[in-house]
Length: 439
Image (cartoon, rainbow, N blue to C red; front, side, top):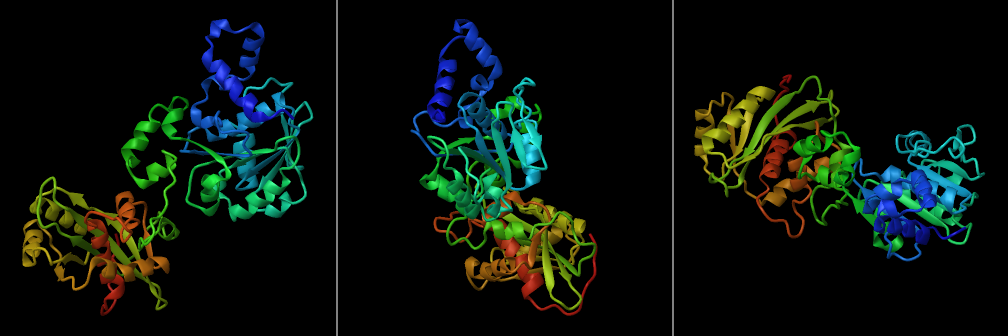
């Protein structure tokens, strides 16, 4: 087998350097079969200066062209470099077939003529090319099936989503033992799982690309919609920019902790609903935000209780009557029993502001007697136990939660403070008798 890296990068460099009119007829025919060599962005190809690598990791946002890169790499190796035995590994068999093989950018949809297009034999889990090359298909859910077979090449898709990813990866690596230089490409949207940290730590060469790098292949409105809804959030940085977001050490909350309890459907009825606020001491562009969180409590027939975060209405820069009106409107919308307000800043003035703004439910003032971290720790423990769930995604709040408590955290955790007051009032303070409300 010809070493793939020099050939792969040589073709990219040659095509990029030359004007189309200088190509020979043979080169034009070759380019007609491999137009990807002209259109690929940097993230879609191994670094030219990386040496004769074994593993290549492509971290990309959603729609960044990860599948196309992996499929084109395998196709090039099979048709141009004499590779005859390939492993295709996906999170599930369904993913392998629907994305890697039959997907829009999969191996059977790269524009090959009939005499070059591979055929998939689902009963054998084998993709076969007319030249005799074969790719065996594996699910990361069945790592033991990788024991025994041997390969020259492997393409692993969405490795950050593999169950027990390190065990699957290690088993595959032991099977990459044919040819002169076995190689593996791994394509994935990043997540801070142990396997990804290993690969980034030196076990693979790494390329990266945001979704925007491949925008010309996506719906025209997609990028604008994503930016409008998710721009600047941690979700966007991971899913669109392809950044690896790790939870800072010592932070009280982790993203996995929050994700474990997330739901999209609210319970039909709540036993209690409140709105909690952390009011700012001043207003204006440089003032702290007013943390505003709505939460509900569900009691499970005497077998415990669970808190649901319903809304994050936190806002920065408003005058007292304006944030007061925002609190009053949210309390009416969710059917809150009361508004819980931290009174360390302003005391009775906070109650007066809310009443002047039209808040028509009782305002209960709370005075903080311990630090924010000490108040937050029991609430974080409830998250770790699975007793608190987010209904939907609250991006700014969750970003703040996953930074709070970490070394170097700066700023005022206003939304987190309101969250802590809300969960504490519902879960950690005694209440007499159930109250049933719907939203």
